[in-house]
Length: 225
Image (cartoon, rainbow, N blue to C red; front, side):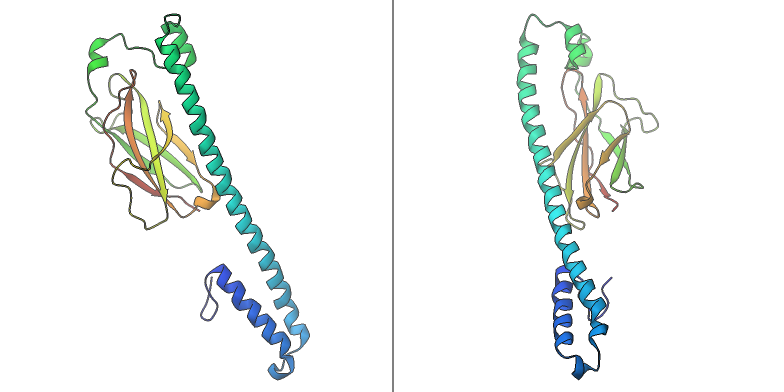
């Protein structure tokens, strides 16, 4: 932790300690110190400089890898959904095959298929584990039960990760899809670069026919570093 005259930021600290090392080394006699006094300072500065550079490089690599993963998933989802639409429209595909593929099976109970979802899931986030959130959800109409509403297949979980202190999203704009979970709880893992940030979650029920219910209240939780 920075104290007094020592800058708090790592880059500012490196600039400061480099100047300290350079000036002191050049004015040993005037300062009443010896070259031996400066050995641990110089060695420590070089070590810190090396590791600071390595840390910055690692953070940039992690951010790049995460964006690559996100782009890859988006592309994969797009081509998969296109094929699923083709399969759903095909007379050669029956409900048994749809179930085996894990895609939507038309609901044969018409009242369930046509009834809209009027209730919302309530999310509760456990932040006790480092870089991990366990999200439990239940229906607002039945808070003491883990049962989903009639005709509901699962709960969509979306998130927006922002620096600590930033205002949470007021709508679903900018949210990223996390999962469609069929049973509570669901665990979300984060990279080390997200430590200390805030994850803002929004949830909604999804019926077996693909219909979606209203969004939940935003649930915000710190990503424990």
